[in-house]
Image (cartoon, rainbow, N blue to C red; front, side):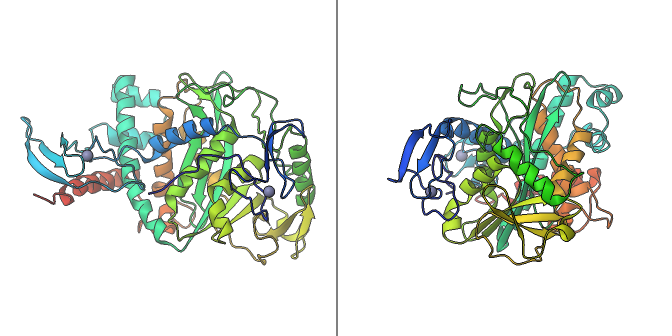
Amino acid sequence: MLEFRRSFNCCKSFGCSNLGRVNSPDYTHDSYHLGFRALHCQRCGSYPPWVDDASVSQLLSQLLNQHFQPRVNTCPNCAPRLLIDQNPDFQHYGRTGAGNPRVRCKSCHKVYTLGRWTVNEHMPAILLALASATPPLQTMQQLEIAPKIYYQLLNRLAQGLRSWSREQELKLKQRPVQRLLSESQVLKFCGNRGLWTLASADADSGYILLHSHNASHQPMSVEGVYQSKPDSRLAQFDELSILQALRQRYDQTMQRSHFEELNLGELQSLRCGYLAKPALLAYAHFQALRVFSDSHQHIHHYLEQESCIRGAALMGCAERIHTKLAEVFYIIRHQQGETAIPPEGHNVGWWNDRWYPDEFGAYCPITSRHHYTHPFKLAAARACEDFFSYVRQQVPTQLKSLAPLESLFEVARCLFNYCHSDNLGQSPAMRAGLVSECLTPEQLLNTVAAALAGEEAGSKKGD
Ligand SMILES: [Zn+2]
Ligand SMILES: [Zn+2]
C-alpha cells in the first residue's frame, strides 16, 4: 500500500544524513535566526523554511480525489482509486427493473448496479469542439443545450478519459527508470483571477502524467492561504547569455524573504475556490507523483529552476535518494547552452550549483553532484511548455468558476497525450509506447467507450 509523507519539516540538504528525516535530535524547531520561521538542522547548518503540513495534506487529498477517482464501473462503496488500489471482484446479482445488471462486491458485500459508462449523442461534438479550441458557449449554442447539460457531459467525458488513460499509464510503471520533467505556469482569467499550475511529463515521450493547480475547493487555513504579494517568479532573461541569465535567477531567489517563498503577484481565485501558497501545492504534487512509480524503479526528476519545486521533489523521493534510487536535476532551456558553458561545467550562485551545457540549454545535478557526465539526454525538454500552450488555447479566459476547470484540464491532458502530433505525426502516447497511432478525437472517444464497456464484460468473473 502506497504511503504518502505526512511531515515536510525536515532537512532538505543533499549530502546531509538527515535529508527527509523527521524528528532528528539534530533539529531545532521554530528557529527565527534568518528572519523567517524555519527548522535548523545542526548537522549541516541549513535552515529549511517551515511548511504547514496540514495544508499540504488538504491539497494532497484533493489532488488524489481529482486525478485518481472515481474509477468507472466499480464498487461505489469501496471506491478503489485509479493506479493506487486494486479493483475488488464482484459476482452477479440479478438485474434491475430496467434490465441493468446488478452485482455484489466480493470485498464489502454491497450490491450495486453496474453504471456503464456510455457515450452520449453530444459528447463527440463536445470533444471535437474542445480539440479545435471552440469556446464552450459557442458549442452550447450549436448543440442547443443548456450550460448545465454541457458541464454535466463535460464531467462525464473527463471521467471516462481519466479512467481509461490511467489504466494505460500502468504500463509506464513497468520501466526500470522513470524520468519526469516538472514545470509550472500561472494561468490567468478575466478580472485578475487565476491560479498556479504544475505539470509533470514523462521526459522521454512528453506524455503528461499530472497537471495540478493551487485552487482548493475548501477554505485554506491562515498558514496555507495565498496572499497576493509582489511577483517573485524567476524571469527567463532570454535576451541575456545563459550564464548571465542563471546568475540573475539566483539573485532573484536571494531577494525573496526566504528561498521557497514563490509569489505570483495580485491574483484572486476563480469562484468557489481558495488559492493556496504555491509551495504547498508543490509538496502535494510530488507526493501524488509517487503513484506513477513502483518501489523498485529508479527515478530521475528534472525540474524548472525553482526552490520550492526543488524542496518538494526531494521530499517526493528522499528515501530513494538515500538508497541511490533517485536523482534530481534543475534544467533551464536557453538557445545558448551548448556554446556558453564549458563541458566540464560552471559553478553559479550562492550554493555553487554546477551547471552543464546541453542541446536544450543547461542542467544542474542537485543530487549526486559531478557524478553525471555530458552529454545528457532529455528527449522531451519542451513537453510541459508545449502542454501549457495547448491548455491556454483550450481553456476559455472568460471562465469564472473553478467547478468545470478540472474536467477541462483532464480533457486537454488526454487530447494532448493521444491526439496532438509532432512534425513526425507522433503523439506523446505513441512515443511512450502506449498506442500505435495518433488518434483523432473521435477515435479516442470510441476507444475509451469500447475499453470501458469491455472492462465491464471482461470482469464478469465469479458468476
Ligand atoms: Zn541537514
Ligand atoms: Zn465494495
